[in-house]
Every structure is written in C-alpha cells, then in structure tokens.
Length: 120
Image (cartoon, rainbow, N blue to C red; front, top):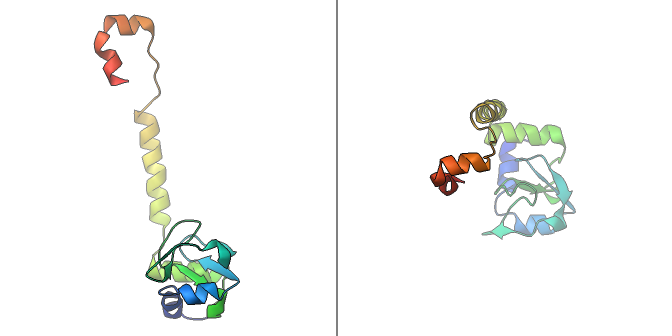
C-alpha cells in the first residue's frame, strides 16, 4: 500500500494532476467522484466538491489507490480518527432535545404576558 506521505503530497498543489485525472477521491469524506466535479482551487490546491475540504483530494493520475481502505488510512494519519466527534455529536443532540422543547403559545398566554411577542 502506498504511504500516507505520498497521498498528502499529491493532495497539495495538485491542479494539473486533477485536470489530468478521470476520477478523484477525498480522504476527508471518502467520496469518489469524476475529476470534472472539482471546480474550486486555491493556489492550485483542489477543494472537495462533496465536503468542501481543502487539501484532501487526490486524482487517479497520481497512481494512488482511490479505494475506501486507503482513504481511511490516509484520513486517520493526517486528520485523525473521528469516533470522538460522533460520540460528542450524539451527546450534544441528547442534551439539546432534553433542554429545548418546541412550545407553542396560546392567545391566553400572550394576553397575560404582553411582552411575550418580543421573544418569538
């Protein structure tokens, strides 16, 4: 398997390589897409058209594999495992749904508290 340093090198200043490729992949979101989908570059470095990550897109002209297994290895090396992020998102969602419940006001409540209309 090619090393992750090579993938990182091919993900930077890669506009010419992307334009010479047929397919590309992003090691930020693991998406594989046609090279023609890549339309945004900053200083000749491609942005992912799916997740808008910068410096994570490699093209098949680099001769690197674009399969999920390789993309995960590169992701874990350069970005890091994201298990903690999924757990934190689940905890945040649980807290938010427990604290913030959708409420509706009735006309009686608005009459009792005329200032209520300012907090809607």
